[in-house]
Length: 595
View 1 (cartoon, helix red, strand yellow):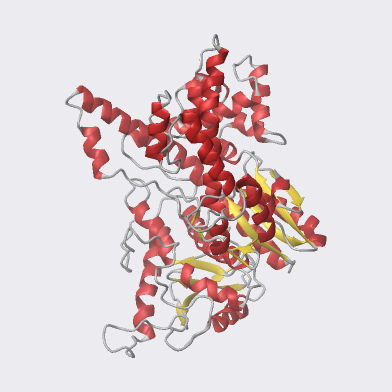
View 2: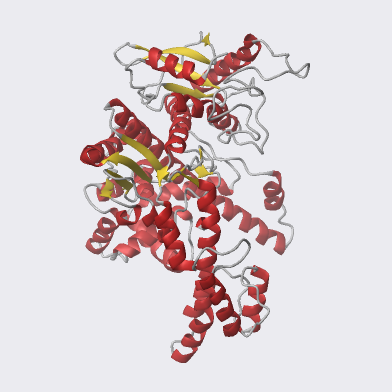
């Protein structure tokens, strides 16, 4: 039996001091050898130094105990068969990908994401092997007697064949170097996610409880509303003249609003605010009346979200010893963005951010990539004008300056932001619809790029990110609907479905490519922190934002690493491009100070 400590020692010994260079991964070795729990394939860095590649079927179950045994483990070359399989299966369906792939390992059911550990876990994650538990990488009992275990060779052979099939599929793709890098980044993402879960986000439970009491009142009895929430509910019933109203029920709240003369079909806050804004300017009293009806609704909904998402129950379940151990899901979003499994790691609301604070003598280094997606669009579209706007300045402000110089309608920073986001997300109404034509005159290549991606999607075809992650093909329902144009209603439905798919593919190419840059940025940060043996850990990630918990004296060096990692990530993913990806970095005592 190979334990987590054994595996960690093997990885450290065989990786040596080599810092895995994801920019030049070499998965061409076809003679993997068995090394106990995993597969090791030989790779070489630019200097010719041998470096092993560690291949796991499912890193999400294998890496947590390895990191628990050796928290300072440096990142080796990793290859996660299931994460890469997911990428290749979709690429195989895309015309023009060049990927011909027949998996050896049976693909996981659609309900099982490769970035989520199966339930119940097949092995102990945090504890060593004990009676009644499987040791790490022990063979699972067969369908025979409880003590009957399959031989290691029977388990390893299919994995070896699967690795060979994946290597061949990547090598024969239309852009093997890019796809190879995507596979390496996706696999290393599993290490990053496992390490951030192990370390946890520093969280001051006492501060959190104080914030809850200030916002909601003292902690209530089970299934009861906090006092301030109870008072808000009573006030809402009075305002709407609905004594039996249950504000926690959307149906009950919608009935109360309708009976009070609020003509909405949803309790969505933007819809409610829109009804207030739509009050005739000639009758200021009407606007005041609408505000009086809606503000108590919004206030109660705000309290309810806090209680549900980050209340006392959340604190009890997710914060252990003043650390929030977020569970990230690598590739949890179809574009390649990460997701979170419970706990709301990707939605830490402003009201509780002051509870995110490190211990004595420590600091938080918080950084975000400014206007990441528009900068990525400049690279994808090879738009020199947009690239020029990215260099050395706020991109939206630069676009507005260009608009003024060329007498365009984009003369304000806010207008530039709305127009760029509208182009990337397919907005056709309101300010976005009005400003996108102005944007087209300034940056025709950028707009043409996303318009082309939208047109491909409307035809029911697939698009891909910079490194080669493909969008899913439309399902049978979509194909059936867009083909049914015999009637006027059918034509309207078909047009709506085509446009919806076009908006999806338009954004897919940009959001997915941005996610690839973000993974490389995180990988470079963690590698540098480990290489320099700093007392600092990457603890939080949100699309284009990271947080490092560091010794206060090392914070200046961590800031330098974070900035340098952004430049390295740009070279790694995009190569030498005339687009800058600046990051805003702040060293703070609590998360709320960074914003």
